[in-house]
Image 1 (cartoon, rainbow, N blue to C red):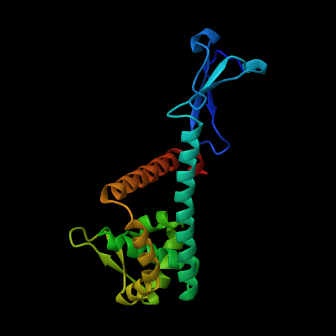
Image 2 (cartoon, helix red, strand yellow):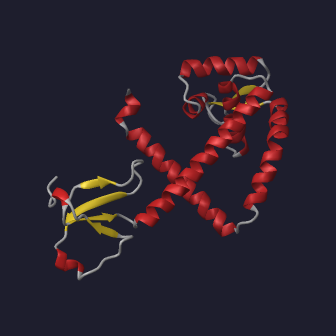
Image 3 (cartoon, one colour):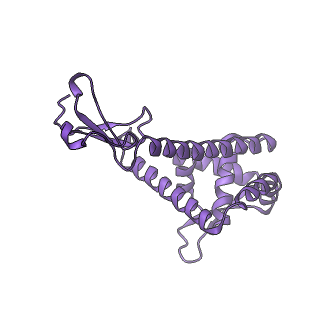
Length: 214
């Protein structure tokens, strides 16, 4: 690689933290530089290339990696709890995942359409329709047409499934709320903002990725 090309490099095997390679003469450093912010390669064809982290140094990259790992670990733990709910109700994992998504959307005041649910649980429209028929026959969900637009169908949990889910999830949420109670409203707002932006960035990447068309 030519040291003067200014090539974009990838920092860390997980691709977290982009870096930029630029040729930097020794005299520009004035004898020293911040090791956390930039490093000059000393050996091989890339000698004299400044590898500078965009948006922070190695410590910042490791901090970001820890945050992403913590968020993904929490998401994984929640999914495991959802599987436990499925087993306790003798439901197929996809059925339980659908019920949880429907109930969460209801609680947020934004009930899901069948198409949106299919995206959330990564099933085809046909498979989602079969799943919904099964849940409706079991008395777990109902499909309702909108008051303003009768063409729009939204999904809702029955009173029975709400009671079962509330009873199962209540002990977990007591613990989660106890943890969040240690933080100020401003800190919680910041966490929510970052999580929303990370989700949007990931969703945007998925929507634009050619791999999603395969």
